[in-house]
Length: 134
Image (cartoon, rainbow, N blue to C red; front, side, top):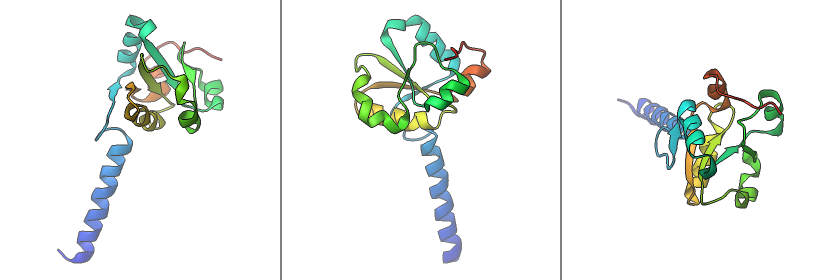
């Protein structure tokens, strides 16, 4: 193997690992829940769950939201983290599950018990779970 091929292989492996990290597949410091698992947790532990929506207000207008969720866009999360209770389980979601991975990593690093909704509100809606239109 020549040096050019080796460098290409290294770059390729780096991008694969980076992709898996960004998706929360590797090195995740939080748990992932399917939409049905999240819905079940919300139903069973309503008073012990805080549902965090990290989308933009415009996305909420278009797609609706999970009933009872609190909107704190990802770009405001570090400034508003004090609005999130430490004594509850936190279910984080976005549109498709990418931004919520970043939010989940951040909150977990601060000691929160975090669950990331896999597939975001898109997957939630595909499962036919209830959405509140704003």
